[in-house]
Length: 150
Image (cartoon, rainbow, N blue to C red; front, side, top):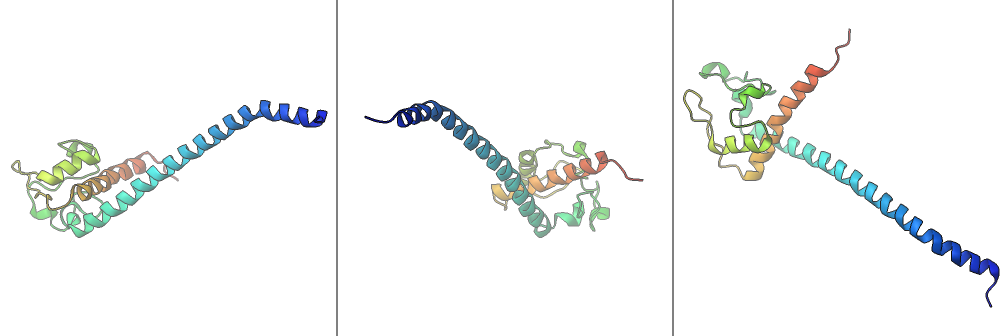
């Protein structure tokens, strides 16, 4: 015959098991959510860095400038001038990274604009380049909304 304390312990364990299981499920869910949040930020950061590298390698800055202002070294030789990526109205085919990637694939050949196609880049490369271009606009917006110190 088992002692009263062992029966009480068994009963207590049975009652608290569902609570411990629920707490464990909640903790695992919260941890998974945090991991997803951090990984999506991390993935976005990696994509933006890869896009910045492609922006330099593909000589986008020659026309659009290092910060995407449309003030690159060749900008004054182009009519019309290159797009200023800080301006959302400059994105004729849409403002998302996917929209920018689609524009990169086809180029802009409607006169008088004359950006060449970057179809030689893979879809992934065009997408991360689009992520970087969108990040230039975001960076500008953040600078505009940041309180100025006096």
